[in-house]
Image (cartoon, rainbow, N blue to C red):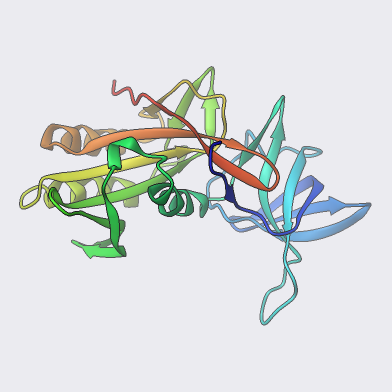
Length: 236
């Protein structure tokens, strides 16, 4: 049986009303309108449409928190998509211990948020015989006609991460980008060069230097999720 990651604590269904800012939206639950935290700064315009059924994770009021819910998922035709950009790091951490990533067999986390260059990259992994591997996870939620597209907005930070992974290979043997596509309808992933040509330029430099590109897609339920399979990354 495939191991699963419990990703919500108290899931509830609601209806999307409007996006208020990068990290807030208004949702309706049982006829009452609430402000919800959106753990994803991307636009998500194709997913966040008025009247859309959304998955909320109820959060108890504590400290300075002003929202009763996290907006973490969107119900699409026939499946649930996660929009929580915190999920990829949880997937990597859980998946390493449960065999989700055959291409990372034998690796363990040495450090999270590893400082390198001008950034903090998500994970420094280590292997008893193969040495260190610097890995950056990326969340992908945009899929069109089977193609998972990243990024959905220009990202200078994302381009910088690619070049720093490239620089890591000046002294080490492995660096990797791992895209976690948070929905099951993607057949492959490709860079969305039409949205961010500079990201694509940095990606091509990184690939030429030996940075590895991997992508997996998730199967998502209101309480659990898991890696369904690896999908190819296609570079134009």
